[in-house]
Length: 253
Image 1 (tube, one colour):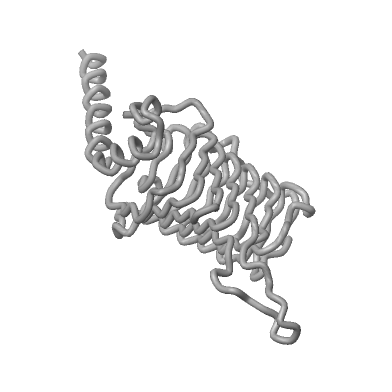
Image 2 (image 1 turned 90 degrees about the vertical axis):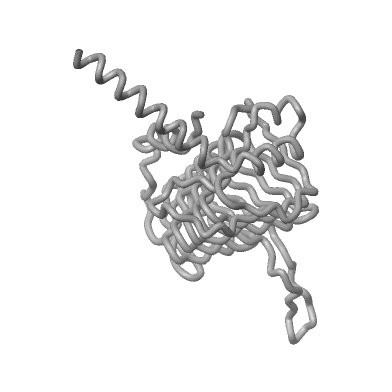
């Protein structure tokens, strides 16, 4: 009898979780984006799920999934952080090329902009936390298992022409960004053009990254304004978290 009641409880709990997830998805935006941006055979699987309010300002670019396509494998507006409420300001401006190498996850109120001629790539289990701004005009690559925490910004352009006031020489207006695999970017970090981080890297909160750090080697902690090497032999214990992250961030509906 106890076993029967336990099985009923488990069934009802799973049903409640699935019902809760079902009603959290913005199905109108989900269906529209998938069928507008993907080939029909991929769109039918609904690999993109959008949650809550999101504005599609422009969808003139291209989207590619270079991995086995699965339902809900890329979530925009997911609630996987402590903050449970959204401001409803999520926005997508897609005029360039957006590529996914596998599952990816975007928190609440993310601003994602890939301008014309821009190329933005997310590796397997790439993640943008809530309130993250990503502006790509040139090239931004985010590696496998790379997470960028809430209120951070990834911007590969100065947005305005900058010059040497003495010589009149103009500085490049944009530059590439490459975030390595297994990177843990803490909250309120600013990542600017020409930033390259090595694999297995941690960036401390409120830091500014603006150069190539790959020569410093792996398993390092960066921090400061601008960021510099803080500690060696330092890394997030990804192996102890991977099972949990795969379970809670990947959608099963």
